[in-house]
Image (cartoon, helix red, strand yellow):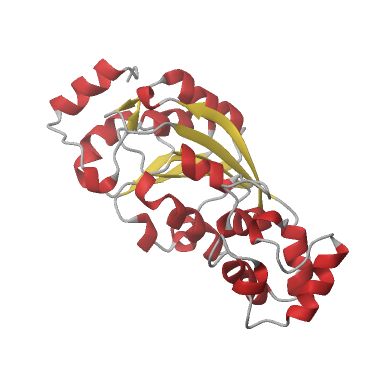
Length: 272
């Protein structure tokens, strides 16, 4: 299929397809954006690509041309007749709720050297999808995902910015997070209310932690009330130990969590 707004509209109408708000359906129709995503993802013939929410298959079809295999998850079964026409032979669609799947089980029979996630993620479940990949302990080499601009800015936020939060640190512990592309809301049907951003997550060597549970609890508690200082947010902690580390980095207990880098949080966690 040639992907243009008119052509896609025609195909969807031919199949009596109705967009469903509850699934956050906004289908991309711009070939240039699709090709930019694929080029930046650097997929090759040894890569298994997982896609979530293929929609009408505009990205899915192109992924199949460069990957060894594509495994896509689509919750809306009414898209089946449209998707099955457009996908490559090396592509499999599982019609189910991605968040309920055992991904390890789904991919166990595939042979590949690299595991990538490439997707235009449904806005309403963007964060749960990314967290699922981490919590399921899948050995993902890279994720290249399109998300709502505001959410993407939080994912890649640096210390000292208003977007920086506990999720920024959580993701930064596992991945190097970078912006690849700004995407206008005008390249989707139906047109969403906001612009999007394509963000890449590349697996990196993790900082040495004595105890991940302590670290993640410390992060959550530090950002519990974002406008409060560490002294207020971390009342149940050994504040003397924390202050000792902070002073090494020219901070004290009146600092807010958004000012501290992941390295400082790791150092604090390792000393608690």
